[in-house]
Length: 83
View 1 (cartoon, rainbow, N blue to C red):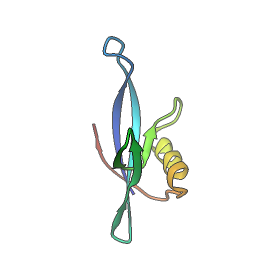
View 2 (tube, rainbow, N blue to C red):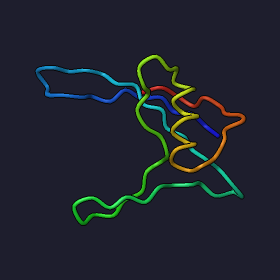
View 3 (cartoon, rainbow, N blue to C red):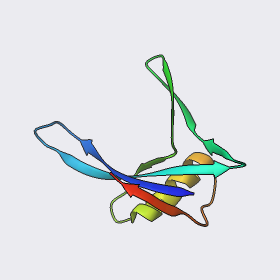
């Protein structure tokens, strides 16, 4: 399990709010797990993860998001980078 932290812009450019986001790169059986999304007729793939809620750490947000999206419990991870 690898952790990528990034900050996402929310709101208009006149009112920029940064929200932390935790993203996981999950490797299982030498394969990377991606989530398939379809939006406006376009198909694309993303790494599991999402926004960090107020009052939780990035690591707690990562654990919660992976549990919600993949039904997996994280036991270990390695921090890769921040954006």
